[in-house]
Structure formats: C-alpha cells, structure tokens
Image (spheres, rainbow, N blue to C red):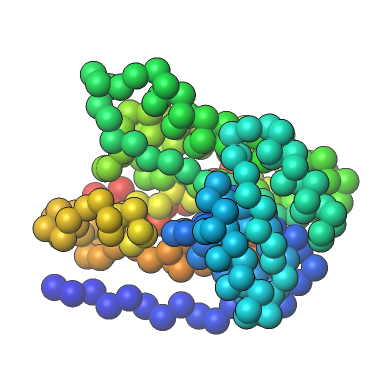
Length: 262
C-alpha cells in the first residue's frame, strides 16, 4: 500500500525575523532542509558544513530566494573552527539566537571489527560536534535572555541504530543526555534545548546506501508505511526554534512514522 506524502504548510514568513540561526551540517539532507525552512521564516542563516561546495550551494539557494545567508566551512568537532564560525556569524549578522546541531556522521562497522580511530571519529563529530557549538553560543543567548538550541539525535538514541554501528548508537544516546542537562542548566536564562530523533528519512545517504527491497521491508513495518521527508524534520525544528515552543525544553521528539510506538 502506497502512502502519500502530505503537503507541508507554508511557513509564517516573519516568524523568525530578526533571528540569527546557525545550522551545522547544512550542506545536504536534513540540515539543508532546516536551513531552507528557517530562512523562509525570516531568519538570517549561517550555513555550516565540512564540504565547502555543499555549504556554498545551500547558501546560494537561500540568497537566490531572497534570504540572508552565508556559508561558513568548518569542522564542528574542532574548537578553533567553531570559534571562527561564531566570530564570522557575529561579524556578519550579530548575536546568534538559534543553533541547530545537524552535523553528523554514520559508520556501519560492528564492534568486533571497529578500531579506536573510527570510534573516536563518530563520537567526535556526533557528540563533541554538538557540545562545542552549543557551548559557544550560550554567552550571547544568556545576554539576550532568549535562545533556541535544537540537537539532532536519532531513534537510535532511544534504541539501537538501524543502519549505523554501536559508536553511532552511543553518540546519539549521549546527545540526548547532553540535551537534557543543558536544558536544565539554561532554562533560567531563557534558553530552551531540545532534540529531534529522526528515524529513516529520505536523504541522500539512505538513497545511496540502502537498496529498494531493504527499504520496503523497513517501511512495511512502520505504522506509516513510508520514509520521512527532510522537510518534515525541518518543520519540527522550525517549531522548536520559535516562540510557539517556549514551554518545551529538554525533550526528545521522534519523527519516525510511529516506528518506536510498536
């Protein structure tokens, strides 16, 4: 049985006007969709990615649509690069009010075959790459008394990964712990910290790495028999980044077609 993809409502065009948003990992996939969605709501967007061409492509798309956007290339697991990203953002647009930590990496190696370097790589990008940008924006968010941090975990953060290895699962569990603890620490400063937990989303990685028969087996087991769309993840992030979500913090919201419900 085929399931149609619902039409996403048009964003409230001025909802995030005057806000400055950094989106890491915005060169493709869900990160790119988030950057597009925040820009459509009026935010000035700093597009971060490790791949220069991908970051610039997203920024160019936003600018061509009339939005304010710049590309800032950098490795979010390196503090010096994060500091440069924050400085560039501040110089260009002023204080950062929204941070979306969408940068991530997935490897499939089983523990038996995994070496220390691969373990470190996945934990550094997925966990340290969430911690460093988050810490870097807290000062300006505290000063303004308003901030939104949205972290990308995964349904793997609540169970085990469908596609990734134990290092991926571990990193996504850890992101949820970091999210809850930061939410507790920052609530008095007007800063909310939440996580989104996508299941299987129709991104380039899934399209390239999972064959159609395997995807069909997965989606047949979901209550909603299809892959999620990047735009649906972006819609959830945009809500959490807005004033509409002012009373929501420390939460991990699933986007999985009901997969974890059964």
